[in-house]
Image (cartoon, rainbow, N blue to C red; front, side, top):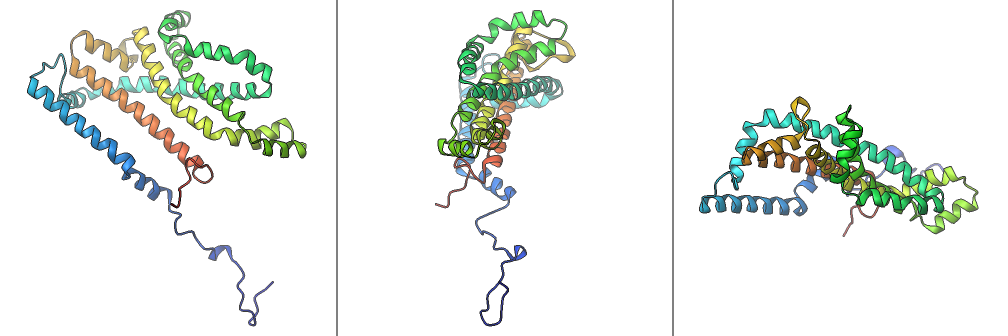
Length: 293
């Protein structure tokens, strides 16, 4: 009904819609997270650990080839950056390739599992076997089989480590659909494809994203372990080769610097995937929605 002078009513207008004052831009929300106790507390603990470590090395006069101080490690990191960073990028390439392969294959296999219970019961135990097989034991065989392509062999080894969390979490999510919603889809005679696309996949998204956060770090671990086993050197050597060479030559500060770079990369991967999860779930899932109280 149009507004009249008698009733003084107002017609709602999208341009004049009331904005929720508690709703803030994404950048502001992330900035608040960076200064929240969840971030400040571990940073303070880390600084205290570094100070205690440095004081311990200084008081006990520990030789650098046994335990270098953190400041010596940082100096070595800066001095050897031009040699260590390219190796880290090689490892990152292997990690990304294995992670993408694990995401695609894990999602497709999980969807296949949920199409038929007999398929899941028949194949899921082999996914468990693949996960529980020590990668150190089978990596030499994979490297021998793919001896003409070392990069592909390393990617396969890292993929094996990163594959299972995505399959397991996504399968659980696809099977955790609300029965009432499933009955509604059946009542309206939705096809199997429509049920998967509009019900199962959205319901499984939080589980899938949780699997991503686990798989990202495992892909890096698998890449480093595969590099240890392969022992590749030269211009295409990863960060694991730098760690090995530093330990063989008793360059322990350099070894610690390489370990610090690897650990930092793992943290960056986890934080990046956490931000992705919060971004995708921020408007509807309980794990990411901001509570008013």
